[in-house]
Image 1 (cartoon, rainbow, N blue to C red):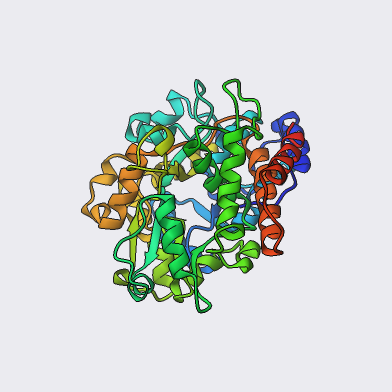
Image 2: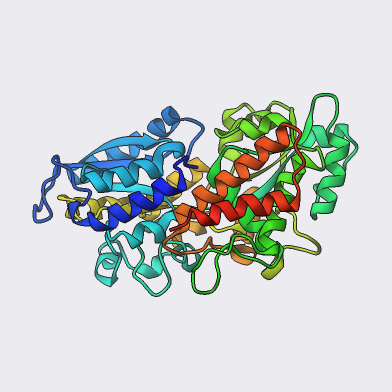
Length: 436
């Protein structure tokens, strides 16, 4: 969900690695050796329907932490469009927060810079131990074989959300289980100024999430076994062409969606303008747009055939938010206490209930609130048919380069240009050339 050009990302990450000693500490902290640090700065990602909603959700919890510890947390909620750029700039300048949220797909990229605190056995012990966390969530917290660069905070998965009224009006009795069924239903639904499927064509990270899953379904990946970019394989090209083809070929996505980047497709869904969206844990945001739970349904993301599972029937990336600490914070003791607080059973239940996500802490998952039908779909997806994005150092550049290629292809489709296999391969070749 960031808009940085790939070349700039590569330069920034290189510079970040060279200047990791600058750290992310702030002058307001009490120092790593201070037994009673008084202030922490925290960058939270925008999880709710708005920045203000996140502030309203988080502020009471941060006050609770202050009452328990005497440590004040200075909160800033950072929009997704700005978050990675802000993290990179903060690390290179040395003027950043003590604690921050990161998209779990960035974990290996940021880990490679050396700027984040490694979560070794000693640090995990300070927050209750590594075994409190679901292993699949930890698998998206850093490169395999290395201590995680962050701690899981919220777990999510993609699902197909469908507007029950629009389905009923079109005479469609159940949600599609395969892509062929989705296209067939989509052609029935796309009429009279209404559309079948919403996309966020200018949202780079969302583009990556969708084409990553489709590549898996085509038996491909965007990196080879050694971690080198492989953007132009037949399967990767087919995945991107299929996704953009919902607009370009099948005409079931509104051309205006090519410009969407900030939840506009979800708003269209809530306003009965779009019948389906592929989204992460959307219940809370749909409610904020006035949609009642009985007005929408949830089903697994479609697969080529059969039912979701491993291999070519993967239907979601392992989505989620991780919590990281800048290694050179001058408030390390307070930062670790804050992570412990945010990953405690009580806070995990409160925050994940509010955001409609799933706790990555095993014991918190036992709360009956996480057994609702919609969360059951998401939990089953995470357990049986989700795969983590490549945990490689160049992952953030991949999101920018390929995400931008998909964005440009959506713009072409919206303008009525044919989206051919050759054009897709050309754009992905260009994206691969931008990789470090």
